[in-house]
Amino acid sequence: MFGFKKYEKRDRDQLIRESIMSDEFLDFMKKNNEPYETLLTYYRCAIMEIETKFNVLNEQFSIQYDRNPIETIKSRLKSRDSLIRKIRNRGIPLTLEAIEENITDVAGVRVICSFPEDIYMLADCFLQQDDVTLIQRKDYIQNPKSGGYRSLHLIVEVPIFLQDEKRAMKVEVQLRTIAMDFWASLEHKLRYKKSIPPELAEALAKELVECAEISAALDTRMQTIRNKIMNGQEQTPPPHKSVLPQKPLKTILSPASPLDIVTKAFPANGTSDSQKVSTIQPSADEDSHFAAAAAGFSDPSASSVYSVKFGNAADFGDTEAEYDSDDEDSETFPPENHRRSSF
Image 1 (tube, one colour):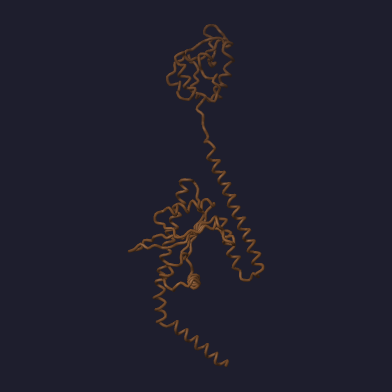
Image 2: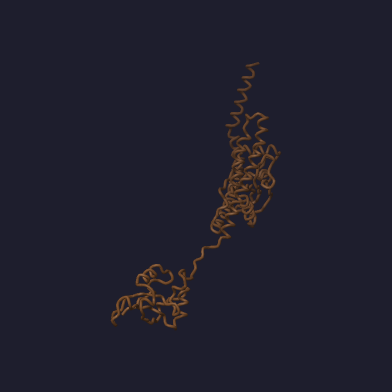
């Protein structure tokens, strides 16, 4: 009996080897594999179309609003094994036409966003494009799955332009925040561990749901902080530089309040250096001109005519040191506008 089984196994292995290595079988595989690989190429092209659309949106927001709502973009094609299992579970005919018609997630694009509001904003901008057709929308953010999963799923159809035809391809687009993607990635790794006892798996499932709620609360809190920052920037007025004089108006030259500018003493008429000083005083015709210059709208040095008035030092203030101090500290007029009388 044992020998019979041994020979039976050997004959079966030889039959399989001869069948697989035969030219007929290789031709069969080649004939059916080429259309399959061609279909996958079409799905790759559709992925590139979707990625380009989101990259363009991200660049536009970077230029217009000085921020990037997209953190990263991921893409994938469903593996052959996964595709075969899905065909078998759904009872779909094993033809390329049936696969293309009934399986909508052969090609997938995942867009990772910064905040939940960015997800809906990007989805609206994406779906408004006239070459994007929405097939199905599943909002697992507003309606999370029982296990805690959150994401926005869009099944869309986009055209790809081939050498001699335009072909519509279906792609699944998933939009998540960083926190949603973090949770989903770790949950997938933990949930499919085969060695976890059933009672422990149930407890861990509840804990994962709690972690998902914490993650969602963190998303909401970070978004609130972002909104406060944005609102604060909008309400804060831009810095304003006044054109009005920063020194008191009493330092501005006028006939009513002459600025004491001590230049030098005049000993010509027998007076001492401390008895005679000169001051610069604008003529009466220049009142309006100096008022405008004080407000920063005119330059009195361009056309001003000065009259010189003489008097005693006691009548006009202190010695030349006071003028030097005012000249150095003054920000109302440039230094060249404070002219000393020269003789």
